Figure 1 (spheres, rainbow, N blue to C red):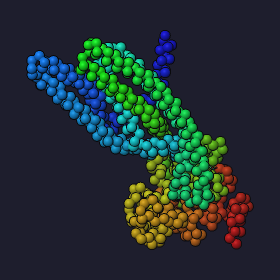
Figure 2 (cartoon, helix red, strand yellow; figure 1 turned 90 degrees about the horizontal axis):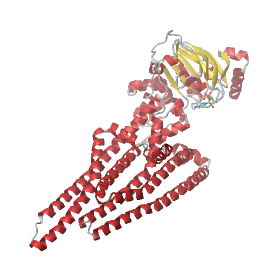
Figure 3 (cartoon, helix red, strand yellow; figure 1 turned 180 degrees about the vertical axis):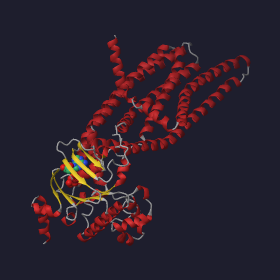
Figure 4 (cartoon, rainbow, N blue to C red; figure 1 turned 90 degrees about the vertical axis):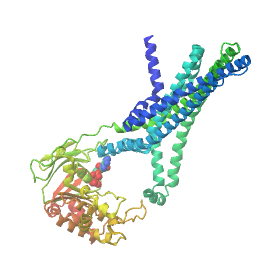
Length: 611
Ligand code: ADP
């Protein structure tokens, strides 16, 4: 027996999985606005209970009319008021119902806006605390994208459906109270009739939920193809390589596969829905017949018959409205499960507190540092030892993929080493306060961002504190050699850059690089400057000039630069050659040339190209 009970509980929980996020959605609404939640609950209660009251008043009206007519025959002239009184009441009830409905929709409209904003803020706030590695995890990134896409509609939809179900449940319960007076068996009959279709709906909603989850990767690929085919920054390549038909074919193939599954589910769902729904209808008409027979036999008044028939009809409507709500809930559930999976992702704690190192002036030290990208079996960098003191410059040389950028990412604590330590002024980076650390570093990556903002702001982003300081923009632009062409733009520093917004000007690759470079000069207080191939798109003369500026500006600071041009590299105090994540050579330009190793080989290769 208890085994059976266990089984029943498991089955019910599974079937009722469609409600699994309802409580959380309501908690979310509660956190968004208590007043609106209470208002919504009240309006739901009123809208749920009043139909039964109206039906009951309907009975009173009919019975009073019948009584008045009997009386009229007997006395010639009847009192109107006892009947009209009920009509007035019913009119009041209907007015109240209209008010409750209106109250529901007004509060829902307000909540839509508030809740959308709240969920978006939750998502973005969480995004600020994630690590770079988490962003690079495809599955996780997908959760974030999905969460953002429907943030303003889904949570509210689930709340509306949940409250709708509560409203229908209240209606049904109040109908049951009326119906019990007729016969408890009639009630049992109707409930038993409605249950199968109810559970079938819940089961198929659950199936759909699981189906959606299982094929998330395909849906993701489809979304990716969509973006690639229809986005400004990919359209150029898609056109030139003629990728359109190829991608469209893939897009269609995924659709065909997904559609077949969808169709199977829809057909099964609606087939069963119809068959089981017939049971409900059958039960309904049995009860209907019963009421009619009882009325003919005189055991029910005409008023009671009117009421019961109304209650049956409205009860049916409430049941089918509930079913519609349930079948829509799996989509909302899907969204919320994803949202919470995202929000509850653990973030690495930033526990460091140091604002100064224990040996100020020691500079940067790498001690036997190795690092693996998530899921990689080969180290991106391995056993790296380095030391850069204030006033020194370090150049990193190596073929693509040798680990240069990874080293910089470790230095800026975008990633944490798998083994070994990185010290700044004698203290482990992990012990530093992250803001204090980032304030000391000015870094420009080769894939720097091209902000869809004004030219001045594009430079200003280099330092959030002085972001809007025009004098600083100008100074930084001069050092980054961007002042000349910015002066030539119609609105100077106020010119909108990029193509996204009206009146935006697009720049050439080299011009953008100058902007990025200027960004690095915004950080006057940073004493570690890192340039990761920011000059690749510039002409040689411009690059030479950039580095001339850079050297003068960098006095007393630590500089690290990555470049494939040896004319730039050769002037660094230290040069480190990386291969497959290992340091294979190190020294000054002269010693490395004299050593006749890989560096000398690469240098010769490039020099020959210029001769
Ligand atoms: P470089 O800057 O010298 O061209 P990187 O430091 O960018 O090289 O890359 C070093 C190695 O790490 C390469 O083998 C590359 O495939 C891998 N790698 C780089 N970035 C990532 C990443 N975000 N996730 C996984 N692997 C990466």
